[in-house]
Length: 176
Image 1 (tube, helix red, strand yellow):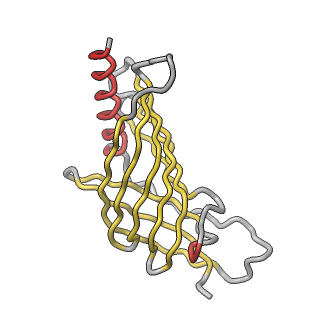
Image 2 (image 1 turned 180 degrees about the vertical axis):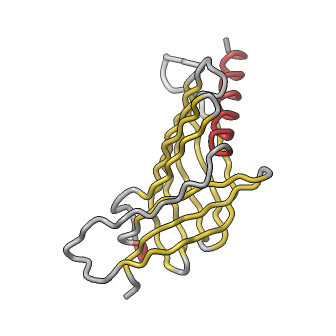
């Protein structure tokens, strides 16, 4: 049973990495939510760069052990326009159909975005349907802190030849 569980966790980890690797360019502008306090015109811009990611499979909690479900911690180091680290959690699901899986994740990103410091939260939602990927990585509304208060946007994850990069289209109120 332990060997089967370890094998399934390995398969789930590989599926998660292939989920992210299979997603096409997908950045879209997200309009900022109306805010009566905010009077300045928001600035929409792009941030690009690379990142390293470490996914660490976690042991299932509780008595229920389903080898198709997994949980992982996320550690990232961003470089480029976004100089930051992130920590997060990922939940995964694999199916008996080859090329079909899904994951959801939440990660807190802390650092600087084009020189403005603070933190924000990214929410990932992804499915792989018989090899066809669908991914959304979105800034959680009102999660920006410090100089990143009011941040909105979507991040596209790109994997080419095993190297990770990002294209982050975002809106941020003008600096004071």
